[in-house]
Amino acid sequence: MVLRPLQRSDLSAWRQYYQQVECSSNLPGHFDAEAHFLCGVQRSQLQHDNDHLLLGSFDAAGELLDQLNLRLQCAHARSVELRWLHAEGCPQRRQLRASLQALCTFLFEQVGIRRLFVLLPPDAGSELIVTLQAIGFEREGLLRDHHLDAEGWQDRQLYALTAPAWVQRQSAQN
Image (cartoon, one colour):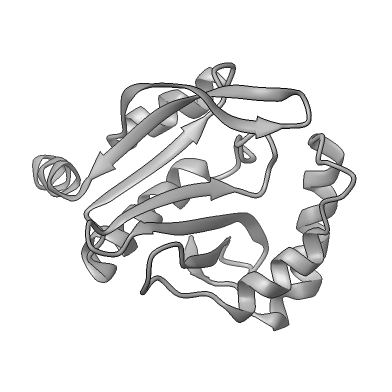
């Protein structure tokens, strides 16, 4: 598993990946995914509030397995929101745990992030939640009417992992 920023040279691999996502998701018609991808590649950084970092998770053969979008919610608090490309917030199951493990190692140990969180719809798949909890994420609550989409205001479940919890978990496993 290799986790690295997506680049313009990844566009053809990304297009193949996105076609799979498009078939399995109900993305809004106005969503221009390729423009979003290219903007994300152009502006990828985590330095200031609301900065985004677009990462790709690749297998040993160089196939793109997942696209991770990180948003630095607060530079001072070093708090980052994890989003997946999928509208439902539920990534492909291939290598999910390995992607999250690599992401947490990168963010907590190299970038110096203090808190990583994800907002999921109340009906998010139990497999995703089990995987998040296996990595160390804990459910912190339900945010009522937090997300506005074409169907109206939607609730979101909040799952988070902090750097101290990550370090403690890693030292316990070694």
